[in-house]
Length: 103
Image (cartoon, rainbow, N blue to C red; front, side, top):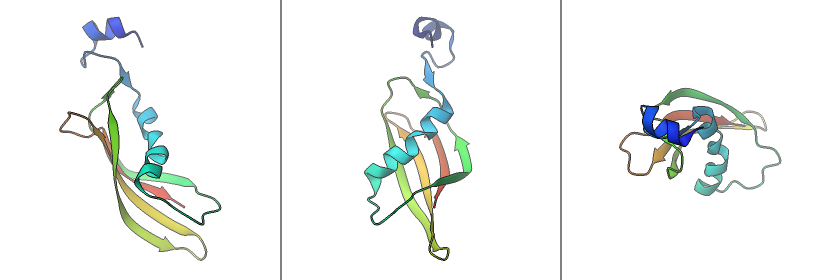
């Protein structure tokens, strides 16, 4: 949290965002990727195969790359698995990758 101290003592040369904080961006950023209509309730059910790559430095620009992996009808409920990858501007490696499950 101390940016002056982080600039000299951190291995990253800066303060970084907590990994789980960056995960919290997924539902928000997904809304910019796809429009879902006629939904009365959406539940963020979980994440599978999550791997953190590199930390996100404070003030870094990020974007979400998403691909629909599967859509299954579960007797009136739909289970959607979205492959998610958080990209960081000017970085070759992603912050994380995983499969997000929505009901």
